[in-house]
Image 1 (cartoon, helix red, strand yellow):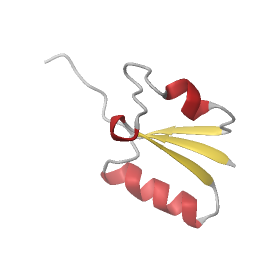
Image 2 (image 1 turned 45 degrees about the vertical axis):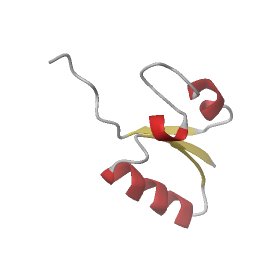
Image 3 (image 1 turned 180 degrees about the vertical axis):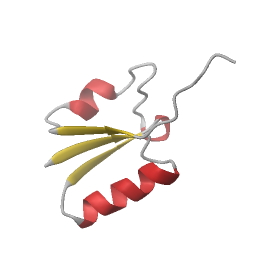
Length: 64
């Protein structure tokens, strides 16, 4: 199963990615560092193609 994890390079996201891969799932690690930006949409459409599940563990930006 293809799973996209948004916020994949953070503390929680990196652990989720590791567990899913250990389970044998195809995981797309989405974060600005990997070219997937959920705020601007950059790389998002490509990352989501064929995904069955999206997990969002990102920190939402706030207007200060």
